[in-house]
Image 1: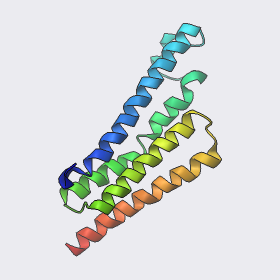
Image 2: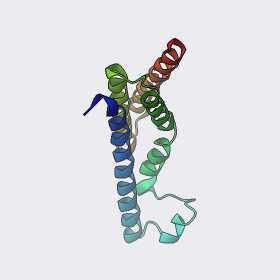
Image 3: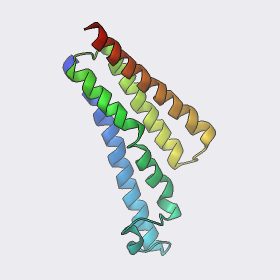
Length: 139
């Protein structure tokens, strides 16, 4: 991995997580239809997600909330050359928090475990944005 691309790899790793969640969602939905607990038509407007796939569906929506700011800051850090080893490590820590958060969300879904993981990612993201702001002010 070259220095110039080290902010891109955590973004790719997060995209892999999202693709994996979509694959799992599709499998769960197909399974629900085959088991007779859902009908294919109900996914047309997706108003009634079956229990088998509800947590995954909710987690996918979650991957397009806070992580949108993650991808934006990674690209901004890269474009402004404000990226460095510390920002890359923070980006990897954020992605790790998303993987752990997704795992907890789609398995036990215990808020007492999920919330601290989310908060960790939230503060990591704040640090990345703060560094970008400092870099821009000092440049």
